[in-house]
Amino acid sequence: MSHFELFGLAPSVDLDMASLEAKYRELSLANHPDRNPADRVGAASRTANINEAFKVLKHPVRRAFYLLGLKGVDLEKVSMPMEFLEGILEQREALEAAMAEKNFVKVRGLAAQIERDSAVALSAGQASLRAGDVAAATSALAKVRYFGRFLEEVEAIEEDAA
Image (tube, rainbow, N blue to C red):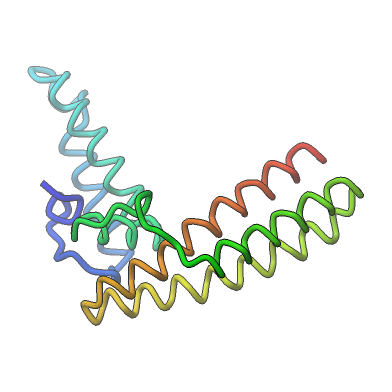
């Protein structure tokens, strides 16, 4: 059963968050182990599945990645164009230089640019999913995956600096 089916939803990039949250509360209460004393293990397993599905569906990036997965796309196996990879490498080198200089203003500036690029790529990926263009969605969302990793690095740098 897909995450969408669990919540009684059609697979879609666009979800009504209020309805999703209401259904989450309903399912969580109905499947809570304390409400199912005869089947605590099963209820705990169902609750874990509900929690994971909600975590994926409420987050636009995770939801888009999940939709691609439902269409048989594994973003970990997507080959990226060399010019994109070279651009990411240049950004990482600039990040390393800023770290070496302890220039956290520059680190934040690099992160801000990647956040903008990621937002543009996510929007393109979502539009492609809406249009049923899996190839274009894959290309755009694979970029989002790379951008996300870059931003995770920045977050680690900022945490270490704090």
